[in-house]
Image (tube, rainbow, N blue to C red; front, top):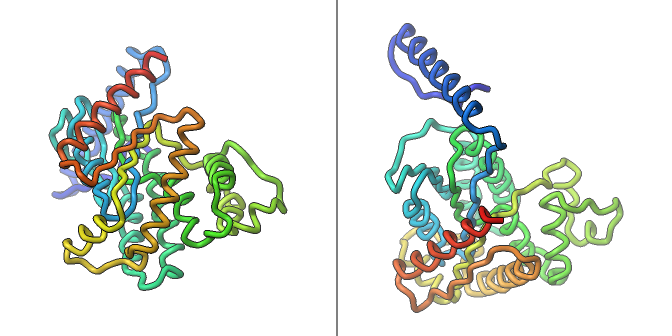
Length: 294
């Protein structure tokens, strides 16, 4: 209620004094903040790097977080906080610990049938983490490896390929982000049972990124990178499934571009990592500046 969960060591008196000092500091900071800022605080610029497994989106999003001045947060397999490019310690968040545990369960799933539920749960927790980070740390930028909203939509091609097209893709994004609420009995619910369940339990308020960077790498190159890691290969990490996912992300990008969303597409097969980071950095800077001016 007051500040994030605290990891403390020492005697009872020391812990009490430490907590009291932190409470006083936060209280003074909140008072000063609202005294100096008469206008409502702007939400962080939320940047999502999307692409198929092995494309390097985690490396890119982490590099972007370290490249920006001010305070930036990276959400991937780990949660990192940067101040002017330098790593800063932060208190652990329960949501992050939980979604990390669930994510590991998903990666260990031997079949796609066992992968779906834990992966959706991890993505929903990851989306909720955006709210907690904004609440407790107020960074200027949040860079995420993937996007819960866009990942769920694109991944539906693996389980419902026959019903996946631009129209359903666009409608699913509107529903999952809370823009539209289809009627009970809508044919879309019959095609995508998971969508009906998410709406039924009111989990259809996922965040649309401010900026999307699509790192487009061929499945063949991605498979080479995945095998080079020397780690167990997940059920979907093969040419067939990654090719379908790549086409799904391309369709998602087309839908977003048609709606005026900030999209940066980088074909990175023949580019060095530093070059890719430079392209993405310049685009995010320009998009953030344009949003501020508007």
